[in-house]
Length: 317
View 1 (cartoon, rainbow, N blue to C red):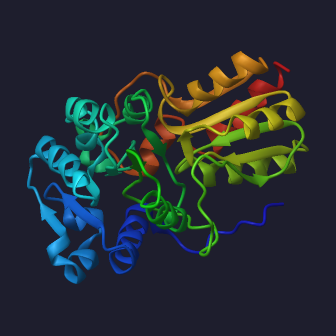
View 2: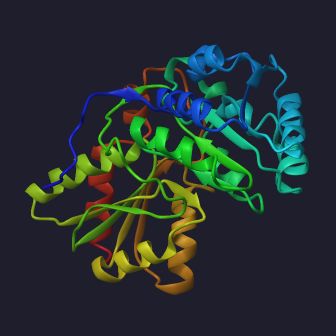
């Protein structure tokens, strides 16, 4: 069915690290800032090769955002990285005032997003970050699906002028997109063509959507799978072209259904082509401690949950 196969599990945060290593070698204006989490962000090689272009801010994330904003004035391209919880919720005022409001060319790079940081517990599992960041005027929001795409996205945002929120995760997940892919901000990717239902997914839920589509095909259901790596700006055309063909849609994301990808898709559909939609996302709740697999199962964020949502939405066509 699908031309995509798991090339071996890798963590998306290592994709960020690989992208930073390449940028360190190719773009002298790129600088890196971190809030005492170098090992977790996988930027050791960048630091070893470019020690003069790295700023260890310590556990002072608000200060890091202010420093990053200041560095842009001198023409630098700062990549400010920490856990997603600290990169958004803890420093929202600084991002809004010092970066977004003034349109500073800062790349906010957030690891350990969603539930899949697992055993670190609920206080570190942010499920509101996409909503927080997409509401900021001028902020680009990107949530890649695997190692290769995260590396490509990291490299691509260095060429994009303006503030960016790049979201990725902790666990090793299927790496299935091309090594040499071209990453185009704001351009959705058709992964599997179908006629009965559209599955629109982002981040870790993209691979789960492909698995669901394979199972659904065995049941005679043709599922179209679209990878939305850029949540803002959203590829409205790709969404509308698909749902006009299939007549119903399931959105899948490792995020609260309030404020996430699903709501962005619903806005497009409500404005242009009202369509039955089901949401695979957390339901206005915090997470808890557990393995990534346990949490994704409990909160309904896997291929089985997507299959269930598809069967439900098909009845509403």
